[in-house]
Amino acid sequence: MRSVAYFGPAGTFTEEALLSQPDLAAAQRTPFASVPEVIAAVERHDAEGGIVPIENMIEGSVSVTLDTLAFDSELVIKREVDLPVSLNLCARPGVTLSDVRTVVSFPHAIAQCRGWLAKKLPAADSRASHSTSDAAREVAKSKRTDLAAICNRLAAQLYGIEILATEIEDHPENQTRFVLVGIGIPAATGHDKTSIVCFQREDRPGSLLDILQAFAARAINLTKLESRPTKRGLGDYCFFIDCEGHISDEVIADALRNLAAKQAEVKFLGSYPVGGPQEAGVARRHAAGRAWKHASAWVESLRAQIDETAVEDGA
Image (cartoon, rainbow, N blue to C red; front, side, top):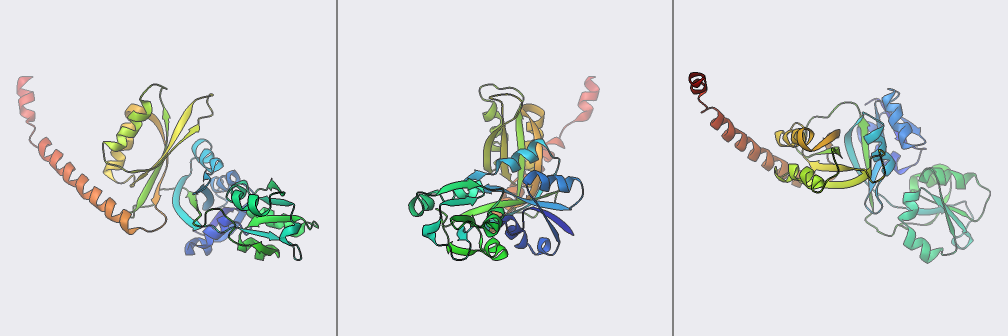
């Protein structure tokens, strides 16, 4: 990939995630001020791919990413990247912790530090910025001596501000998931995930159960189930579903075929390699693939026994 758009400005966790991927780090990088702008840049072919945050282990899904992919774009997810997140409180040189009266950062970052802020800076106000890097840049440019930013070490170094406190997140094993979006479905790796959005054809008792049974009946493991408003009417919801497997797996294809034909309108968001350790997932997918091939061979052996001439004679 020669060019990549990312949620900026420079110094965001999104850029950190991008830099963790050697092929993306070698590409031309262009920051954009919002997730929809990143996705729009890829759709305009200003970049071959775009990387954006999609989920944090503490605060959950990044709704603007889900909604843009589901309702406003035809791009698909091509890869996911899991990044350990360490948050720091940073300020201009000479500012001390006792001086801080206002903390600025991306809303998800502030939320991940609620406990620390309540304990260490109970009188300080919190204010939202477009990104953690934007917060660092604002603090660097400000003349205020009572302003601090929650950001990563990369942004602090980039904008020349000092770290007052490290690892201030309330959960030390914090991680954020990012996705690379673009055009085309990557080939199966044996450790893949498929993401879809299901829109119910009608709101009735058991409709969600019917959707889930399409996966349960085929022993497909779901890794995520989340409801979001459809924007079509108050109380009307769709379901974001992640499952193990790739669209090239017959069992996944069959489940989606069943859903689209019987249960729901389905939007395909992508089949792509899973981030993180792969060994266990590869073993599960290989086992499921062998079982499905065995079952398919058995069904085909039964079909081969059909006597077509008997039907013709009876007619």
